[in-house]
Length: 167
Image 1: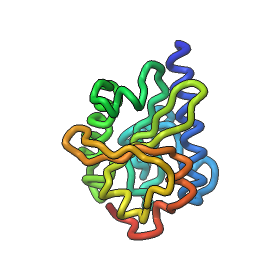
Image 2: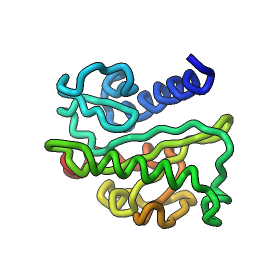
Image 3: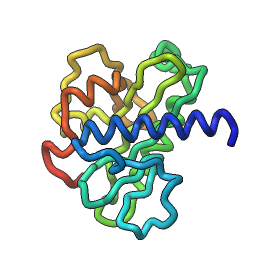
Image 4: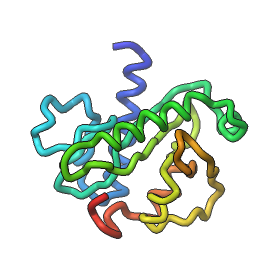
């Protein structure tokens, strides 16, 4: 396993723990997708994070822990990496089959010694009842109006099943 792959796996485990806390689900409910072998296990398997379909978590989560990006570059329209990550996440969410068809995309990203950030459609954040108390960046990515902020702010102010459980 390369250092980059190990770093990605470690980051996905960190994100799984954060998502479990956010959704108020026990440790192990969220798992890095590569650990699952078959999609018919009753798990949602789009994106980087898998979870039992029965918990009603409405997001397809894509995780990125990669150096070299900056929010300044993103705000100035120069950060092609974050934009391409968002497009990948949104496509995977749109391609989710069955009851979760058109699930909501949620991009979680970071780099070394930085906070975790999230990117989500502004409309999906409204659905969660999220109102940015901390500074957030709102911009257009891949044709979507997206808000980017600190993941901890999202986790501490919303609960993903607090409204409806289906996307």
